[in-house]
Image (cartoon, rainbow, N blue to C red; front, top):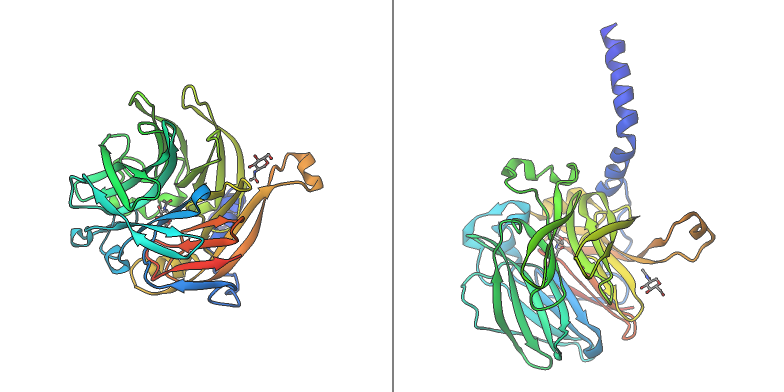
Length: 372
Ligand SMILES: *[C@@H]1O[C@H](CO)[C@@H](O)[C@H](O)[C@H]1NC(C)=O
Ligand SMILES: CC(=O)N[C@H]1CO[C@H](CO)[C@@H](O)[C@@H]1O
């Protein structure tokens, strides 16, 4: 009898959990075949640019900005995945990459008061007060706590000038940034506050306890949304929409933004079927690209072993013009580039006018440069 009750209980539980578990199973990718080609067609691996976690393109000057470091130090210090050996927390660096000539240089960082620069997500926007300047905001995981660093860059120069370090209790586990002006930005927290270390491992499955925080132009900081597994984030060209990934379940959430109050309203959820990270927009077309590993287990292995080959996929998200748009399906997600990377691919950026793409990853031993 007890057995039947137990089986009945399991059946009910299975029914309730079927949909979320099925989604989870899909994103683990253990049942998916490996990509046919390791290095994707049209791509080369640029070995010099390593551990480049986040990339943004300034389309009008065909320049990409990357945050790079050393993959072996990511095994030591990287708070988002519980790597807490402070010996690994040194100086990452910023690179600017010219997409027309395929040349790059490391940017000099001026006025920077700290010796620690452990970079993660970056946000970039033209300065609304001076279009010859770019504002670059970066997550810095200092050993004394994570902060947001704001820099200014004169277009054409090889310098980043530090202007502010933002420390706030609501910005406790920052992941990615959308910057709007020298003062105003959004940031995702990829963990709830005060979560014990052991619990962070299951965080991706947890209820919607992660958040998006807004800092207004007057400096007021508040939480404007909570969601599951908040991670990479980007905005459309006029920042009327924010795209935020729920990493472990492969969803890209679309929020409408009020430019007056900074409030966000969830208007759409796009399902990609693989783990997704740092989304990016090709501002030539408005189309979106999301990148992530298609094998969750190999991916996890790459967090503790250098150079694990991890299959990945870049998906392209476009406006749905098929007949099912009638049923309210506004977006469609398609595979765009797939292959195997030396580490976890976390971001891709595309300039369709130049026919170029860059694919980086926080522990990748190189960056893919692709002709598309
Ligand atoms: C969808 O179309 C609108 C209007 O043309 C455009 O602004 C937007 O960027 C497009 N979105 C995507 C994901 O392609
Ligand atoms: C900027 C950003 O969103 N980075 C994420 C990209 O992917 C890695 C791997 O999951 C995350 O740890 C980062 O948070």
